[in-house]
Length: 141
Image (cartoon, rainbow, N blue to C red; front, side, top):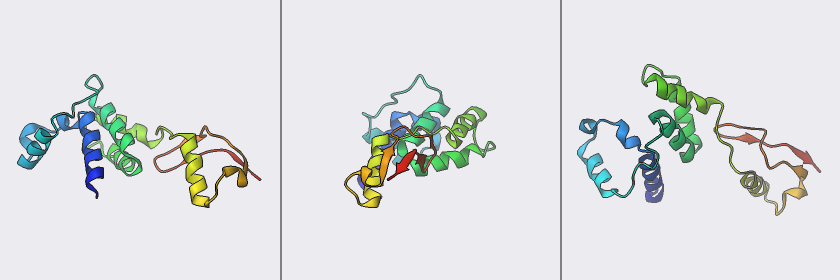
């Protein structure tokens, strides 16, 4: 894992105040030192419940983290009920990504300059979205 990715993950978790969910006596010394070194990263969502902050952070981090949240949501013996219920929303209510990005991904995958080479119509608004994919309507040429 690159240092940039590790920093992005840490920044996201701290911006959602997820470090507050761990009792301070359970954080090892190196975790406390790391947190002190990143003193400028504060919880930007203190008014939101912990479960919502966790779900939003996982969504921001991407598909692998969403899958982790989906798996955690099924383990109600490991989490408080309110957090498990919030994570259960990751099963079928994942925020879609931008339609223009989807179009660009398709163009890159097909190695074409313009999506109109293959599709006469491509709907930017997805019909559905999930943790690792989303569905758009399109008409083949």
